[in-house]
Image (tube, rainbow, N blue to C red; front, side, top):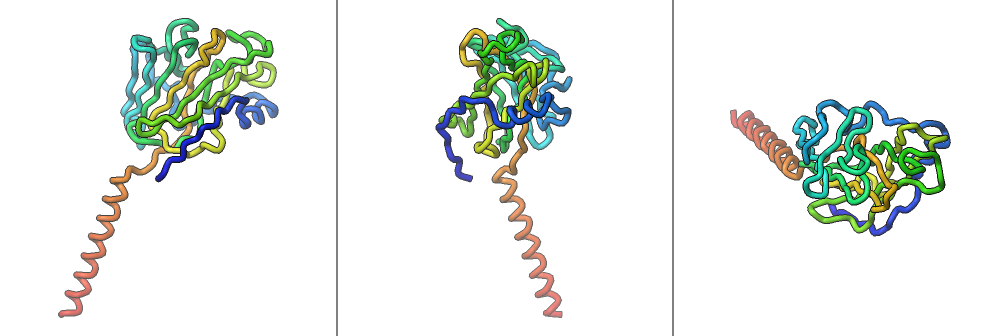
Length: 227
């Protein structure tokens, strides 16, 4: 599959998030494909966390950055980076999620992403989350940017689905979540929506197996014709 790089910077509120907010509260569902709120990802602490029990996703590793930073985890918000706003990713911090097997990405679930600094009321200055996508150590050219949730129309926990729109289903093996570097931009990552894709080698084994079955069937027909 040929990956098409994108260079567009998404600098506005995600369309799906806006639509959901208009209709009512946006809440993180209980059936996220990769749910960082589950106890298997806890407890908090340490610089990284690897989980080999993610089914077809294989091993998924979550790392706090910059070097030496400690992960924060809880069952409500998922992952953040300790320091500053202790349970969130804030100024000069970032969270890296790496996949053993590339996934086709649908989007992300954020928590603590508000339209006012430090959970405050809307003041016209939305908190922002930035996301950079990678495949085979190559970053897509664009940086996705998501704005905070209006407390009046969203949720008290600042929950938002980061819909990647036209970039949906692109192959990704690393995702970096970061703030804009401004003092008030803080958020947590509750989980990721996407699905694993078959490894190229798996197709090879499948085709080889089917070919072998075909040879055996032809051999049986020849033997039957000779008798």
